[in-house]
Image (cartoon, rainbow over all chains, first blue to last red; front, side, top):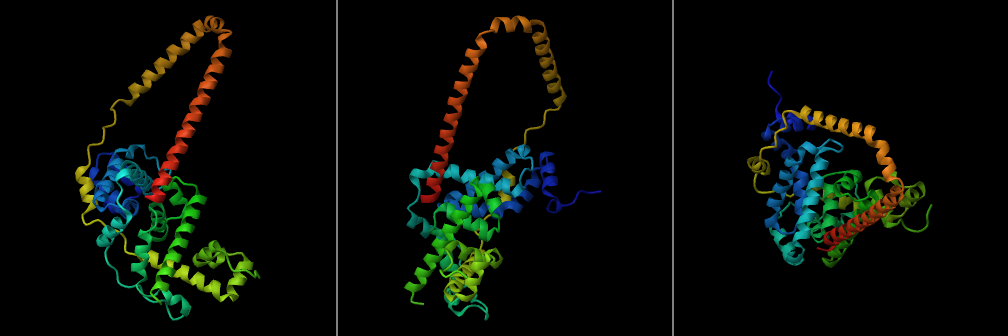
Length: 203
Length: 148
């Protein structure tokens, strides 16, 4: 009987296959976790040119240390931890040559895919709340880019990757309370930024 | 019912789930349009954040990684040999202790207190150094992430 395709294997079966010498099965690990790793690399690293190398470095580290992974956490959480630590190490190395934030934001704007304007809220929504209807995605995307890297990463992990506070705490090695507190501050900053932006646009 | 408006954490929590609010805050929210508006803003912010297009690379990351994978180090074929060596070494040590244990204990008498104190102080200094290093590293990382 032939073995099932890699996409149907559980994380444990996949890891066993890789450790058994099937290196190609590691591609499935990458596919399962690349959304998370890509988000983290994009949010923590401002310089677009460094991101591909960093993402690949994350996976090469994961591959080399796979034998030491004992499933104390989910495979994706473990890979996320490697991504977070790799990006931190990168920031430590590059701290003297970090881009000027305004230049970096300009770079990111160019690299970010443009999106269709977000739909207006439904008919039962509070009329005043439709304040944010126009181009919210674009404005919010830009506002997130202006947050510090840690806040950007946390917002992305929680709201886009839909990770729990506990999973984020495991990935970042921060206490649960700290994660909640930073997310609270990040959202507040985003709200203030959006309100200021819309008031400036006289909406 | 609370007379003052909901604090910011409660507004954010209410935007995620009304069930998370204490009953007094839920009652206030039910009647206060100002707080309802703030909650609605957060709710829209959450929805929009979840709908932001994910960042992607313009190349096949999986294929690129698989092409670079080195060979994993092969498992040693005779792991039982290592086990045997460990058992033999432990056996020799046990025999040595049995035969010369008494003589050793006599020779070391009196030195245990000094040795213990020295080891204790050394361990305490080492631990304190490690804690300080960890703290400094954590602060450095937070500084980088918060302000870079």
